[in-house]
Image (cartoon, rainbow, N blue to C red; front, side, top):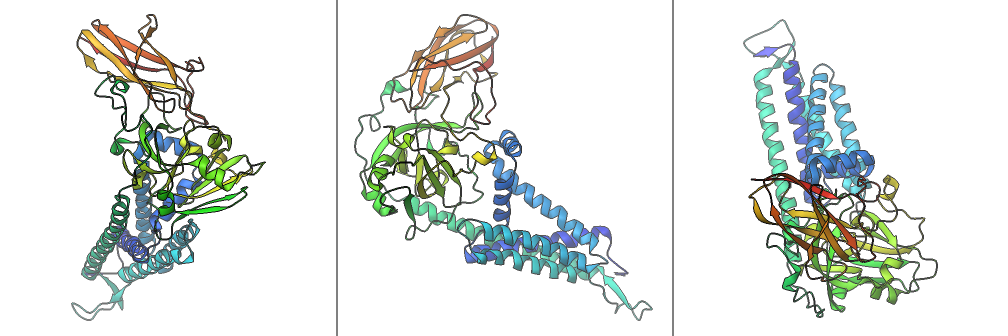
Length: 510
């Protein structure tokens, strides 16, 4: 069948399959050449440049699936744009070429701009755009009409040929994306295999290897958060490329002796284990972005002592392999708290998701100013340097605020009347929990029974026996730290320096 020109629907279909092939080719070339993929490069630039309100909204709506949502959003936007280009290019081929050229340029600039990448990272986007533009032009180009016979119209458009070309393009796009995904999966699997190597033994601490049974008050609330359940919040769309043969962490800046350590050199240093609770500044009151783990590694103060911190140094400024940065006061590394260069988590090598090969853990500070994953560099600087989140509206200092959470019963749970337990966790890292109080409805505050205090840097579990009467009830909790300060009732959002307020839930008793 021949017509004078493709319809708008056919133009949109041609744009979609051409765009899909462009993306698939870009992904495949990136995977083969071991550079950042165009989708991840653009997505990372979006993350870096998005305003604070949009980042907060994404975390609030999607939680730890925010990166998946971003990927879907980018692909959806590309699909809509490709369809629009296809419709516009039905009669004006230059529009298709221009559109693909613009998207290729955006991807190329984004990829070349990413930390650790070079101009070579722009090649996948350029090649993808060229292939996509060429296929779109071929799919929509009029062809001489040869059947059913001589025609008075010199040129036409062959719909059957378009369907064959479109189908072949779709198959090629799927194949390219599939191979690229498999290659990226192999890269990540190789990293996971490397991360599965055993660690050297840590020196005994008297607490970690034998955490007292009294640290747990309810079997449904683990004292140590299983690694697979530990929250993950970061800006990385894909895992950084780690080559242990080349990887080093540099200690530089305002130090007497700049140092550089390989992974093996860090493992050969005296290993320590500490139980430390980490909390994300994006954690809402009663939220789940908090976890308690056993961390193994080297004390940061020992490394800094070897380097010799110079007078005037104000900040420990760290950079990850993917370019993320943060900084915290020098005092937090040298005041006796167990700030660590971490290589292990819960008895195993540090997982890739949590920063393999090395990350920072600093008790008492929110992660956005301290907990750099995939660590590459530590610099001693003044406050003239600003970490990733500070220019985006977050506070320069990030001390973790005293908080408590009700875990048993769950919010809106239905429980039987009679003896029940109200239980949960409270944390005030590097200060410690002194007491926890619980209030049912508008009654008096009651002292909860505290679990064994493992350390000031770890959360503390609590429990209250409750004779639950029938009806709907509101349960509220508050904690007091070891300075005698009780957490405030005043509600504050997570920005700019962490949420405040009492956690409260409602339950139905029958």
